[in-house]
Length: 364
Image 1 (cartoon, rainbow, N blue to C red):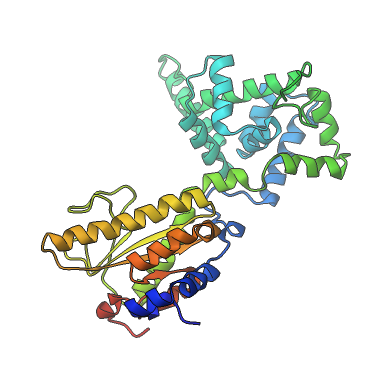
Image 2 (cartoon, rainbow, N blue to C red; image 1 turned 180 degrees about the horizontal axis):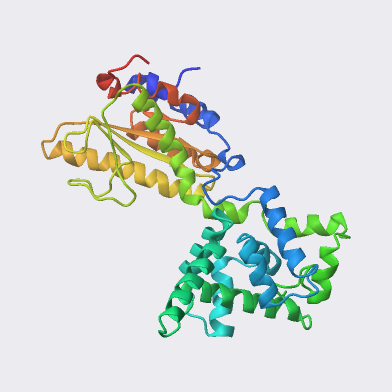
């Protein structure tokens, strides 16, 4: 099957619907695969942290700030376990701490602490050790005792408010609304949590918990920015392998003469011959916005040419099921870009079917 980037302009117009079908059929369902990132915790590590928290709290019969702190010193990832019991995102947890404990923790700080504890199981113990070392040195010199670090204080606030809400549970049902703690492991406070800790939980309850949420939702949100980098990394790998001179722009970077910066300029942004925009999306609304960005780059190209600058190719590298729902947008994109639209399935032809081939210095 031919692809749109293989056709001349008139043939592309004559076979437009066929080429739309061909491009859409190449789109992958990237939602099944997500980048892990540095802070992803596999089940084995999560289960290890769970067992640490369970042991220090005597199967949650002694859930106190002190016992949770000892668990955190042994394994920082118990913070994520406690948050999972609470059933809230880091920003939501921070808001509880702000309201109930008068904490100064911000949503951004909560996300950072959550990420740091996931990335390093000794994060809390390392901070505590540094604090204790400074405290001992100050005492030796007879100075004023040093205060705990902001991070340790904020973790204390998060732990305090989590214990408060988990212990309280849901006092009563209210018609028309459902309480966020109306879960099998927090509905009746500590009694529910202790029951869950015994692992005598009906499978249907677990399935229902998964139904209420979305598997991997929190991780997907955490790595949302990395999803787009999957395509960018694949492009960069091919450019490097072919010895092509290129300039990859940074996130939100501004470059001269471009109201909107593309992801790649070849050979550079001063005198580009090819510019590339890489987009992946699983949502049709987001796909609409991403198509608009690609079309804006082509509009900028026409303005540059009208102003007497040399022409260059605008190339789109896209993937994800979101673009499948935008058939009319796909038609316009193929026409505006003269068929230079590539997917993960056709990315190996990116160099040979664009002017990037003029800059190849290695055998490919």
